[in-house]
Amino acid sequence: KNEVEQSPQNLTAQEGEFITINCSYSVGISALHWLQQHPGGGIVSLFMLSSGKKKHGRLIATINIQEKHSSLHITASHPRDSAVYICAVMDSNYQLIWGAGTKLIIKP
Amino acid sequence: DAGITQSPRHKVTETGTPVTLRCHQTENHRYMYWYRQDPGHGLRLIHYSYGVKDTDKGEVSDGYSVSRSKTEDFLLTLESATSSQTSVYFCAISTTETLYGYTFGSGTRLTVV
Image 1 (cartoon, one colour):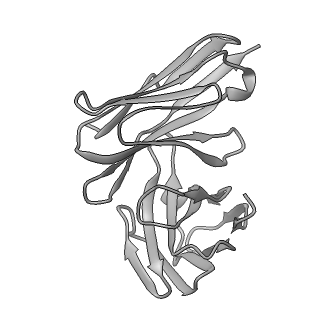
Image 2 (image 1 turned 120 degrees about the vertical axis):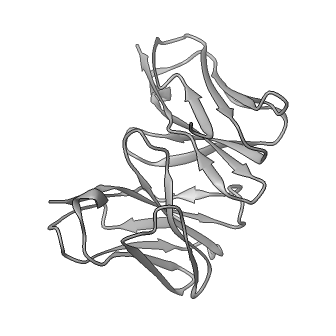
């Protein structure tokens, strides 16, 4: 069993829909990260969380440490949000454990 | 991001040949990393460096070696390329040993035929 599980693996939605991507982990962590990988391959760090909630524009990331679960939300989704979204956790030994990613397609 | 560049961006090579990928940074960051990305897998760490001449193995280091003779350059070498090393390779840099402040390169797509 992977230590970091993302769901869904693939998600297709219409422009304007509210999007939720989930990340569950089974290890103790010091931080959780959400990253975005564009179709061209570039990877961009979106958020680093250790508790609570962060917001940047239309993106919101939340984490529940007790439940070992994080969600990434996109409000008013747009075709340019189409990308692979990756969750990664830093365990207590500073080892990074990566999820396999969620491929999001937003149709106009 | 102009602070980190990978070269080449694409390469096709034959089985058994040596291949070197280069990661160059202009940020003077201490930590540099090489990852590979394959379908169905998360990013997997190959090797990392925490300073000049200081390197260590990641989870998938077999068949790979690295060198860092200058702060700005981190080289990944496949001594004798195999088809299982066909992948997309990403370099990343960081100011700390945590993921905070990571910057990724644009990737190198390597095909071993």
